Amino acid sequence: MIRRRSARDTATGASASAGEGHEREDVYHLGSVPGVVPARGGRLSAVPSRLPSQRRTEPFVVELDRFQGPLDLLLHLIRAQDIDIFDIPISQITSQFQVVIESGIDRLELDRAGEFLELAATLVRIKAQLLLPRREEEDWGEDPRAELVRRLLEYEFFQEVSHVLGAAEAERRRHHGKGYVEPRARPEPVREELSTTLEDLLEVAFALPEPIPEPTHVAPVRVVTVEEKVSVIRRHLGRAGRFLFSRLFGSWNDRQHVVAALLACLELAKQQVLRLEQVTRFGSIWIFPQESPLVGPQANEGAEERELAAVESEG
Amino acid sequence: MRPDQIIEATLFASQTPLTVSELARADESLDAGTVRDALRTLRERYEAAENAFQVYQLGDGYQLLTRPEFAPYLERFDSVPRPPTLSRAALETLAIIAYRQPIGRIEIEDIRGVASTSVLRTLQDWELIDIVARGDGLGRPLLYGTTRQFLDHFGFRSLQELPHPDDLPIALRQVDDPEGRAAAGGTTNERHGTGAGVTEPDGWRNGAGPASETAG
Image (cartoon, rainbow over all chains, first blue to last red; front, side):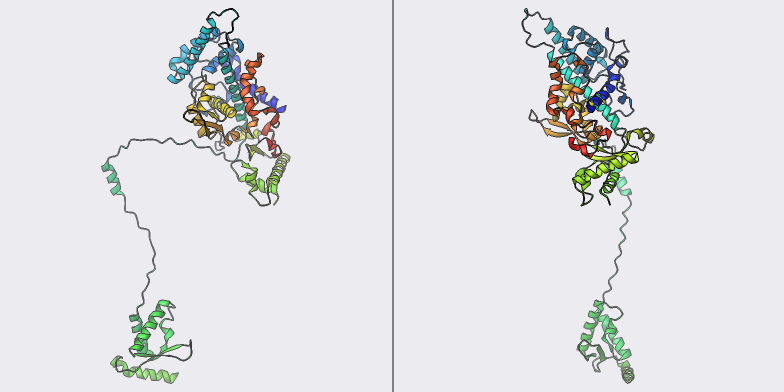
C-alpha cells in the first residue's frame, strides 16, 4: 500500500508541471493552433524545459524540438483540450494537428518531418472513414479510431512510466557513492586525411637520434690458461723450491684456476720439470722441482738448489 | 574481527555495488547468511550513529551511499562525480525496454512513433541497456534489455519496483473504459504480474535492508 501511494505521488509530482496547462503552452513551439494555445512564434528550441530534470545543464540527448514525436503532439492536443480519448473528435484534432505541423515542419529534419506527416495521414484517413456514409446501424466492424486510441494509450503509459523513472533518477542522484565511475562512451574512430608527404616523413625519421643502447654490464670473464699457470709454477719453483699445490689457486678460489693449475702441474710433471707428492690420501699436495737436465733455466740452477736446501733445512 | 566489520571494510573500499556472494568472498568464515546478518547489523549501527551514509541495495548489490539530505553540500564540489541526467527520449525508450524486454528497435519505434537508433546507441554507451538476444524475425533483429547499471541508475533493487500500470495517473483512463484499460495495461501485466503487491514497501529509499531482498 505504501508503495502504491508513493508511486502515484512521485508520478503526479513529475507530471504535474508537465501535464498542466501553462507549462505546456509555454513550451508550445510548432505554431498556433486555433482554440488551443497562443502562438509562440513557432520557434524551435534546443533547450527542453518541459520537465524540471531537463533544465539541467547536462543534456543527455539534445532534443531539437519540444515534442518527442507525433504521438506526443497528439496526446498533448487531446489532454490540453480535455478531450475524451474514447471519443476523439477526429475532424477537429486533425485540423489542429495539420496546422501545427504546417507551421513547424520546415524546420524539422526530413526523417522527423516524415514521422509527423505519417500520423497526419493516418488522421486524415480515419477522418475520411468516419465521413463515409454507412448503412443504418450496420457495424463498422471496428471503430476506425480504435487502433489510434490503442497506440495513444500505450504511448501515454510509457510516458507516465518515464516520468516515474525521471523521479527515481532524481532521487537516486541525491545519493552519492565513493567516486562514481562514469561509463565511457565508445570512442568514434576518427578518420583524418594525412597531410604529410613522404619527404616530410623521411626527414623526421632521419632526424630521430639513434637510440641510446641500453647500458649493459658484463663482468669480463678472465680466461686462465694452462700456459699462465705453467709460468707461475716455474716462478714458484725458481723462488721457493717446493710449495703447496693449493698455493697455485688459493687466493682465487675458482674452479678454473684449480683446473688450469692441475693441468699445468701434470704437464710439467710429464716433462719432468717437477714432482708431485701427496703423503696421505686427501692430504696436501706438494710440488717439488725435478732435477732434470732437460729443463730448468741454466743460470738459476745453482741458486735454486741453494734455496731449496735452505728451505729444507728450515723445515 | 566481527563479520560486520569485515563487510564494512569491504563496502567502504568498493566503488561499485557488491553482491552477497561477492561480499562473502572476503573471508572463509562468511556465507550468504552471515553476510546478510552483517549487512543488517551495519544498517542498524549506521542508523543508530546517525551516520551520513548508509548501506543501500542497488540491483542485487550493496553499496555505501550518502543519505539524500547531504546532497546539497556535496553538489557544491565539482570533484563529486554525478551520473548523467537522461533526456525525455532516453527515459521514454528505457521505460519501453524495461517493460517489454527483450524488444527490438522496430517495436520500440512503433510505440514511440519516432526513430530511436541514436537514443538506443546512447543508452547502450551508458550501459543502461544491452543486447540480450536476437529475434526470430527477418534479419534476426537485435533485442534489447535493461542491465544492472539500469537498476543502479534509478536506485531499483529489481525490475519489480517499476510502477504497476494501475499505479500510474493515466489521465486518459479517467474516462472509465475497461477496454482502454486492457489496452494500456494488458501487456505489462503479463510481464510483471501484480507487481505492486510483490515489491517491498517503498523500495530502497527507506533503507530497506538485506532482509527484504527477496524482491531481487
